[in-house]
Structure formats: C-alpha cells, structure tokens
Image 1 (cartoon, one colour):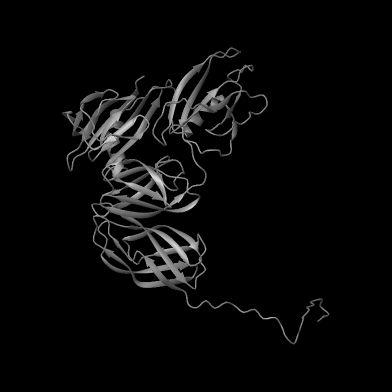
Image 2: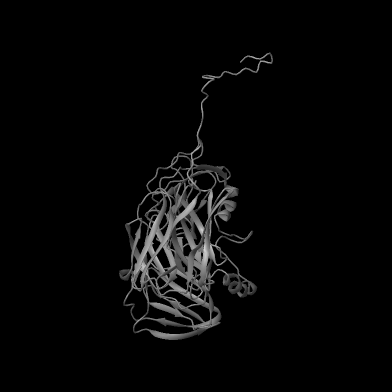
Length: 469
C-alpha cells in the first residue's frame, strides 16, 4: 500500500496474515519448598539455612526476584535464581521468632506467587545452628575466596577440627579450627557462583547457601608484602615524583612510567599474620644519589591473585595521605611511630567496641601497627579459647572490668588455626591469676594462656603484640 503521505506498508499473504501465539504456561504457582520448616534462633543467635523453592509457569531472572516469609522474624539475605523455575534463598530466623505457619511469597516485577502456610517456624533445635559465614580475608560477610579461609559462626557447631566435616558444592573443605561457636575452613575451588555449604558435626548437620568468588586468591602466608623500593642505576631526589609499582603473588610486576624509578614489589619472606590484617614498617633505605636518605614504608595486606596490576604516580608529599587512606593515622607534627592516647580515649574504647562484639563475645580495634609490634583496644564479654602464639609475646594493660587469666601448662587439643597460631578449648596444668583494672601483665611467646570472663561480666584491655625473633 502506497500513500500520498509517504507512509507505505507491505503486507505479504494478505489473505493469510502471520499470527504470533503467546505461550500459555498456566497460572504461576509454587510447587515445592525445601525445607518446609525451620527452627527459630536460640541463645541470642539467629538461625541461617538454605531454602530451595521450585515453581511452575514462571520465568525468573537473577537479580529481579525477591522472597518473603510473612513474618518480621524471618528475613532473606540473598536470592539466587538457578533456572527460570528454580531459586535458592539464604533465610535467617531471628532468636525468639514467633512460632507457627507463615505464607511464602515470591515476587518478580509486579507479579506475586504465594504459598499459604508454606513455612513452619518451630522452637529452637539442638542441631548445629549457623548464624553467619564470613570471608576470612576481609572479615566481612560476602563471597568466599576459593583457596582462602572462611569463618562460620553459630551454636552447636563442633568440638574440634576432627569432629567436623564440611563440603562446598560437594567438595571437601579443610577444617582448620572448630569449636561450638566457630569453625574456620578453607574454601575449595568449586567455581564461581552460588554454592551449598554443608556442615556435619557431632550434633547433626546444617546447610546454608553462600556465594563463591571467581579466581583463587593468594594471601602470601595470609598477607602480601608491599615494599617501597628504589631501582638501581637511577638516583632520585626526594622532591621528585614517585611511581608505585604493584606486584602480587603469582602475578607480574608492572612497568613504571618513563623517568620514574621507584616501585612497589612483592616479598614473600614477610612475617605471617592473620587474614585481612595490615602492617606497616618504617625502613630507611640509603640513597646514594642526590637528596640524602629516602625513607620508605612497607605495608602488608592480602591481595587478589592475578588481578590487573595498576601503576600510580604520586608525589612524595602525598605519601602520608596514601597511608592514611590505607588505614594508618599519623598525627600532624608527630614523629613517625609516636602515638598518644589520652585517658579520655582509653575510657571511651569499651563503649566504642560494645556494638561490635560478635557471636564470640569479643571486639577489637587496631590502634597502631609498626615494625615488630601491634597495639589494639579489646573488649571481651565471653571467655576466650586457650591460645599459643609461637612468635609473638602479649602485653595486656587492663583498663576496665575483671577476669581470670590462666597461663602455663599445656593445651591438649591445640590445633593450628593460622600460621604460628594455635587454639584449643582449655588449658591443663596452668596457673590461674585474677586480673582487674590497673593490672599489667606480660605473656611470652609459646606460653599457653586463656582469658576467662564470668557470666554477665566483661573486661577491657589494651593489647600489645611483640614479635620475638
């Protein structure tokens, strides 16, 4: 058809025009919910579990679906869409949740599919109760790094590493440490995406859904050393620009821009330290060119394996800002390594840390990290485990509260939880010492020690860790 207004159209087979038939999948509906019942959280700890939901007549798209359980006591941390008719939710039931049957709703866009009385909330169980799973490198909720440590918190988890078995998508996970409230494990290489984490312990099993990040992460003995260094043959004055060159374990070192010789390189000989921690060490390196001695600072932090290597050009005068952004505070005008905490600061530490105590009843705030010592404020509301530091001595300054410190003896069930760090449930043959505000105590490396707090009590202290060669 050709019109005078140039709006033309062509119809093929005008007597039999093409017809599109929209599919009729029937009314969307929920088919199965597994499990159909969950216990409420107990002893102040929430209960987390994987809930599997299959449907009919749906076209789910990942990231566009939410799930609700008809109760303010039941929340959903994350939803994974496995197929257009199959999804998995990480469900959390609060302690003291209302008991009974509640509707399960699946929402996608403007459509809602509901299963009345689809979930039954029951009284707390004696089965293993998972509260949360943290990334052991970042110490935050989120995706686990393959080949690195994950940390599970909860109740009734296990008694020792030998009493617990864990799998991630069916692959065995190496258990480094286990107690009734915490399990440290190594996430195996299982691929990117959602993964089913199963714990089998003395009191039963627990299943939760977690996200696994892509690519194996290396931490170079739980940390990489970044070192400011000079490249031989090109002397530099301190006033000139500085190029930082990053190299990671298993990766390659980036090339600096022309005319800039200083870089940042990896050194696997660094002392080992806990996942996610950062350490700085001031080092003076002799500069044989003009400008005198060039100070450099090295820092340690876990880095992803084989990620893109970035090269940055900064001015020497901007280095304090760079270090500050990395988490190191250097008061203006004070010599490097000097710190002063006023009595008002020390008194404020317990209240500052009170909201940060987790299921283990302990919270800490790093205050300084230089050379062979670290300095932190600690608040403990529950008794700790028996500990042995193979290379570090502890100095405690009790600032508030009271507790009982047991030192010496042996730790019969000691297990290595990190390099040079052993933990166990109790000390045999030690000496108990009552400690309270104003007391100062030292614990040399390799000496077993355990700090206990009576029920309803707490203790706050400043902890200095000194590496002993």
